[in-house]
Structures are given as structure tokens and as C-alpha cells.
Image (cartoon, rainbow over the protein chains, first blue to last red):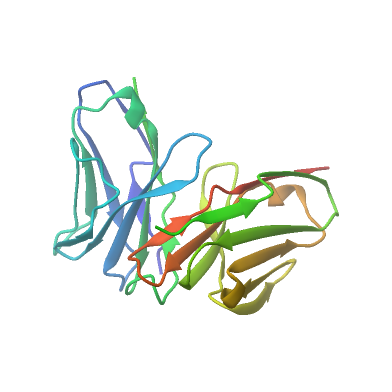
Length: 115
Length: 109
């Protein structure tokens, strides 16, 4: 049973470009969470999605950031017009149902560097 | 929202020593997990422990939900234990895990 798969592992973008980060949850998991980790800091919640629905996006910056989890395919975190401050590790987690009552598993992360 | 505090922030040990990491949280929780982030950045699940005590090899964890804290014990530490240890909680009224700032552990040979 494959774990949570994130790709790419490393992504370099120039300022102003778009970044697309992908997350395939574990088999049987329909809940996906995105977190951001700035250098030397802890993980900060960004968004919680179920298939085709955004449940909680209270941690998402209001501009340039969006997320989706379509009926088919991986969850996508999209960052438009990237800036240097977007450089961070972005982690995705999945669970079979809401993490209130179950264990969440994380992918290996995507390390975004904006140059 | 819920506050999660981990202590100590940094810990340096000699190989073979024991240690205790603490996680305090400010509100009722349904779920608590401990993670190890290794030097390569990978997050590894250690324990899912909303309450009670669990053991896995040299590691064990105890959560006392009524007193709002959890402890992670590492015995006979090894250099491969180095990294950051995170506690994450799911508050009763919330919708996701909230992480503490972590404990940076360095085990020297």
C-alpha cells in the first residue's frame, strides 16, 4: 500500500511564475490536508479538502493560492505569480476520514525554491 | 484556536542517553500524534495517541488528555534519532491537526 505521494520533490520557479504541487493520497483516503513549513519553523495548516469540496481554507493566503481535489486524480496546490517568500516545504497529508478520529499520514513534501 | 507548546526547544544528548519531550495543549483534543522529521525533511509517524500509553521499541508515549499534555520518551538514544520531533493535536471543535514548534534533538556519537 503506497503512502502519500507528492510530486515534484523539488521545484524551482522564477519570481512571477506559477507553481503546481501534486498530492496523491493513500488508497482509500478521501481527506487531504496541505501544510506549509518555512525554514526552521513548524508546519502551518493551509487547507483541508475532500473529494470535489474545500472544507476549510482558513490557512490559505487570500491571493495567489488555490487548491483543488477533483473527483479523479491528485489534489493540486497552485501558487500563482510566486514570490521569494513562497519558498518553503509544502506537505500534504491524507486520512480515511476526518483526522478528529484517525491517524493522518504525510507525504515527503515538495520543496519550492523561488529565485 | 488551540495552542500547542513543546519543550525543550532544543536538546543535545550523547548516544545512549534517555530523554523526555513534552507537549502541552490549551484545549480539549480528540487526537494527538507525534512525528519525527528526519534531517532529510521527511515526516515519520511515531504515535497516534489521543490518550493512554503506547510503546514502540525504544520509544514510548503517554497522553493525559484531562491534564492537557503528552510525553514522548526516547531511551538509549542513537545518532539516527536526531531531527525534529513534532506534536500535533486535533482540537475537539476544530477541523485539522495543529502542530507545535517542535523539539530539535541532536544525538552525538
